[in-house]
Image (cartoon, rainbow, N blue to C red; front, side, top):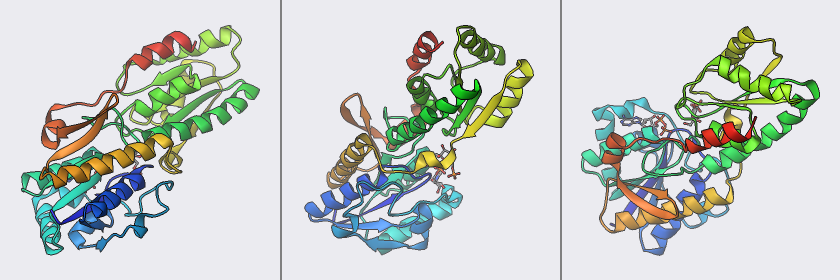
Length: 320
Ligand code: ADP
Ligand code: F6P
């Protein structure tokens, strides 16, 4: 292994830069040449590669986003796109690749692995929805960003005795809603992994009001339905003054938390080591306090991510 490359793909996530920095620094420390590929798989197919130096990643550990930019490039799902990508990797003399992204990006990595190109996956998405790891890069920062906003919303919700529906990200996963729901004392958490009825949500609101609560926070994962749709349905069920806040892409930005910087550094460092050991087709992750290495194809095909559903019941019993 002489020359390796790294790319970021899918939705960006705070901590991606920490991982890129670790890949570059560890690679150079061990005598490798490290290339960055701009714009994910789109840049790979287009040949948008650049050699990265120690200085290129200086002053990046504290920055959100990704210095390699990111892209969604559906063409990479097709074999033609994947073969073109491998041609470019070979043209630049790359021996191994590190992909930082979500489960879609992992599928690209798995496809390259099937075609014989050594690829390592690093979990990077605020959604925390990747199998094979307890946590993904960006999740911790995102939930802290959400909590910062919800604390402010609570002030105005109390002043006006209003019910706030806060729509948070998580394309198909309830992790962000679950963790920020419990962290903000939300009366109700609505996530795709748990069935609910509007009557149930209404009962939770009314219970709080009967006890003299001045505000109600409903934390809604976007994967269930939009905040506006949810508000309309809820108002059909009861006499409520609702307001909807869609936090949107603010959740994806900002300086990474300490945890995301450390995780990114650990993941990047270990990804380089795996390539140096001649291993490909692996994704790195964390389970408890342990760094874990899983087969990327097996992880995608046979493992399923589930949020920490015990939090759901805990919230029901402490936030009424
Ligand atoms: P994320 O990685 O955050 O889940 P996406 O699902 O948008 O984000 O995937 C990111 C990119 O990964 C896609 O734009 C595409 O280039 C690549 N990708 C997604 N699915 C596949 C697939 N089945 N095979 C190969 N590449 C894929
Ligand atoms: O996958 C991360 C994510 O932020 C999801 O939570 C969200 O549904 C999606 O990306 C938004 O994608 P885009 O930035 O393309 O609008």
